[in-house]
Image 1 (cartoon, chains in turn blue, purple):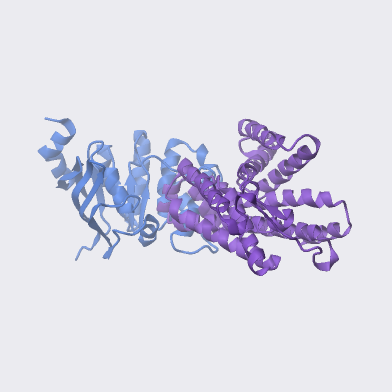
Image 2 (tube, each protein chain N blue to C red):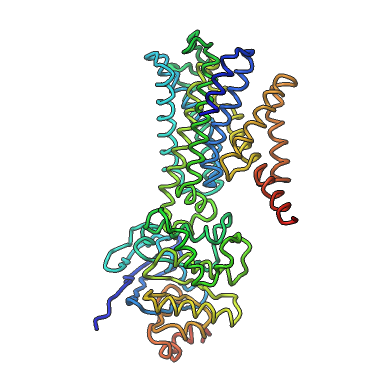
Amino acid sequence: MRVETLLEVQDVTKRFGGFQALGAVNLHVRQGERFGLIGPNGSGKTTLINCISGTLKTDAGRIVFAGQEITGLPAHRRTRLGIARSFQIPKPFVSMTVLQNLMIPVEYSGRGHGDGVVDEAMGILEMMGLAAKAHAPSAALTQIEMRKLELARAMAARPRLLVSDEAMAGLSSAEVDDILAILFELNQRGITIIMIEHIMRAVMRFSERIAVLDAGEKIAEGAPDEILANPRVEKAYLGE
Amino acid sequence: MTVLVAGVVAARLGVNQYYYFAAYVVLQYIVLATAWNILGGYTGYVNFGTPAFFALGAYTAIVLIKSVKAPLAAQLVAGAAVAGVLGFAIGYLTLRLRGVFFSIATLALAVVLQTMFINWDYAGGARGITLARPAVGPLGASYVEFLFVVMLGLAVVAVATARWIEGSWIGRGLAAIRDNEEAAECMGVPTLRLKLVATTVSGVLMGLAGAPFPYYLTFVEPTSVFDLNYAVNSLAMPMIGGSTTWIGPVIGAVLLGTAQQVAMVTISSALNLLLVGLILVAFVILAPEGIVGLVQRLARRRGGGA
């Protein structure tokens, strides 16, 4: 079976003034894959995600999604093509209820504004276990509910690729399992997932392949057990 | 529609002309506050440049009167169009600026435009320009009464526009931008395009409010159309009334506009801004969501208690 590449990151470079946040990073993510992206704090993970989702402009390099070059496209166009993300620090629309939060991506990800928007949003809330909170103000959610809302909103955009940026940071271990189960379920439905995470237990269990960033460079890539055995990775995390 | 008919009837009843003058000002503030709120309240971009758009509407009318003696309808259309173009241009140039930086840019815009008009002799320059207003309006009413009805119509148009936007997908997109612009963009909301819609519509409505102004006062000078009052009031009224719904600016404009008119007659005209300032401070501290928010909060509490 030929495995199709869904996302291709070619020599993507990003500087902030004199600071090189990303230096010519390459990544290939396959259709349907569970891909882990790890690295110490400040290694450029979120910067890379911002470049992929379009909230940052890359200085050099190309990004190709489903065979189409998307390097210069604004973020909302990429969302419509099928790239959705959750934010590391939840960014709910605080003046809206949970349901209204989901209606934004449902309406704006390219399906028009007609009937069925509410039903579709409710369907996603049910899948995420948030249906009971549909009419609660989004500002009143607990930490775990807030994370689920982030994922639910990303799902509401009907993505082909979901980028989960530290969806589990600060959660208890039972809650981590809860989120992991959701992500496995989404992957079962055919959604490719890039997971950025510091909780090693979760990334190692979830990912089929992992890339490691350190100081803006990709220092390793491979299956979880290869990554664990890699001396460069150990050095990046623990020092000499 | 009913509002309009009532207005026409009131105009025909032949009340003291002063009341039309005062009511005109209040209606004008309904238009300005509603226009401001589409950008400031719905989208979260605070515009200090209301006088720029208002004055541009007025000066467009002046140029049309002076050059071709154009009728009021043409003045309105042209004033709205020019102010709308300015809104679009400003939106395009500055909307990459967030928060307070956008506000500073709009303030600068008003100053730059004022300087331009001070130095433009054709439109009166710094000395101002006197215009002859037609003696009678259509249907035999006095022209002031006619202008009052026109402004009433504009207020209805402005509020209807705001109400439609608020209930549509555009309004939901604008609210998403206000709440979190980055998240909105990542959810597929074309943030730049929607913000341009907001600046343009807001500019059009402000230009509409300004276009009848030359005939209303028959004398226009830069300091009167670029008055700080317009910037402060168009911001204070939605904030006092409640900036997330269309009714908020209307409530704020009616209350504050009327209070100012009363204060102007009974106390002094210089006291107006002080009055606005004090009320605004009180609201920001005591009821940050305005009167509408306050009422909703009380209703919820009562509903929860019962």
